[in-house]
Length: 155
Image 1 (tube, rainbow, N blue to C red):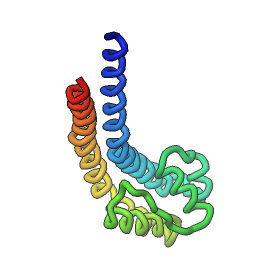
Image 2: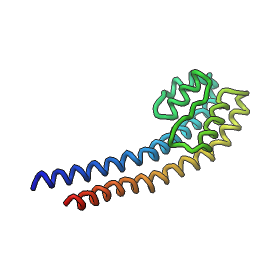
Image 3: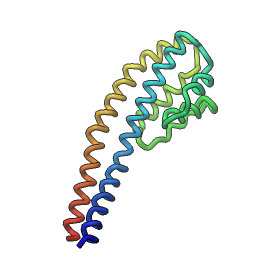
């Protein structure tokens, strides 16, 4: 009897974890756009005041998260490699265009470009947070309910 209850709980836990891992796409997407928005804000401030080279800016910020790794790779190699599965093709193209503008041209034209990107990045960040809130919870609930359905079929 207790083994059956334990097995049922483990099945429900396993299915809920599957739902959690299925929602990781939306968490990664949200974190990517939050990091990109934060970097954009910092880079605009750097252009206004410090005007350090791109490699110094990237090294001082660290390479945390997917966007941090992408920007670190771009600062080293000057190649855009946004190969993330959680981004759409349009978002990958926009990210590559964003990266290609880093460190090119004078500071005034860069400041204008990155200031214009601020609203777009904010919209994408908000949309990614909203999508995570909607679909992340949905996948968790779906995993839990799938586990319950499986347990009911077993019993």
